[in-house]
Image: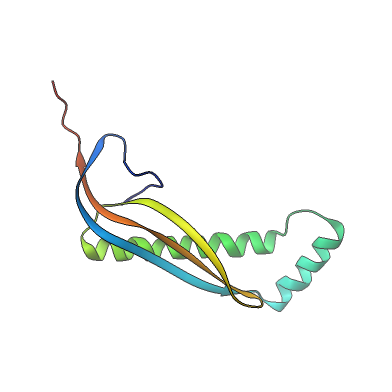
Amino acid sequence: MIVATTETIAGKRIVRTLGLVRGNTIRARAIGKDILAVMRNIVGGEVAEYTKLMAEAREQALDRMVAEARELGANAVVCVRFMTAEMMQGAAELLAFGTAVVVEDEQDPA
């Protein structure tokens, strides 16, 4: 499955558009990670616990989006974007969305 943030994919042509696909996850912070984050905030530096949490959330949202695209018969998703929203204090939604398409190799005009 090709996943791209662009409208087109080099060397491919879109032969069918299948529609919007999306995947989301809602993650809550854990109290232990919050304590570590507060400590890190005092001394400065990256809050690695939250970085890892967001990376896992992005991957899960992407995986769910790709699964939905496969169910439609797509072999690519174009115009992929991410959005986040706070659901409640300490919990956020991460949404990945794009357009499911079928692509084929471009034919050489030669």
